[in-house]
Each structure stands twice: as C-alpha cells, then as structure tokens.
Amino acid sequence: MSYSAFDSWQAFFAMGGYAFYVWLAVAATLIPLLALMLHTWWQRRQLLEDVSRRQARERRIRQSQQQHNNAIAPSAKPREKSL
Image 1 (cartoon, rainbow, N blue to C red):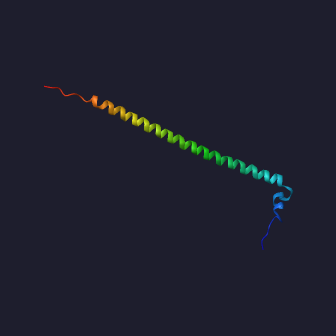
Image 2: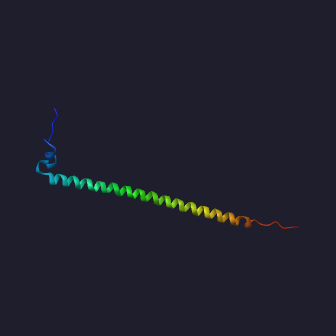
Image 3: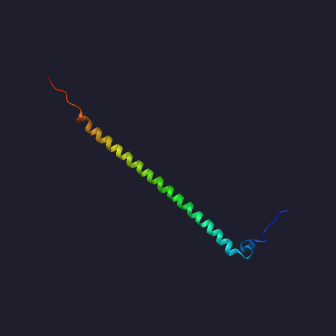
C-alpha cells in the first residue's frame, strides 16, 4: 500500500494552500546554491588559467635566460696566451 500526501499534481503544487511560502523557500534555497556552484566553477577556471599563464611566463623567462647565457658563454672563456 503506497501512501501519497497529495491526490494530484495540482494539489502537490498548491501545497495545501501554502504554495507561495513553500516554493519561495525552495527558490530561496536553490537559487543561492546554484549561484554558489556557478561562482565556484568560474573561480576555478580563472585560477587554472592564471596558473597556466604564470607557468608559461616562467618558461619564457627561463628560455630567455638560457639564450642570454648561451650567447655570453663563448666570449666569457679566457683566451690562451700565445708563446
């Protein structure tokens, strides 16, 4: 035997005459939760993009330093004296 609190969908949505308050409470709960989920997703995406940009910048800096060091290194060797 199954028990149903409501006889029909119309009765369910009417909530025994308290529909406005019940659905307002549901909306007041679900809308902030959805907003929080979207904000968290957006923040995570922004954070990962920022980390990616920083890593790419650090790679470019290292490559530039290596190229600079390689360009300077041959002239930095001491020359041998001719006898």
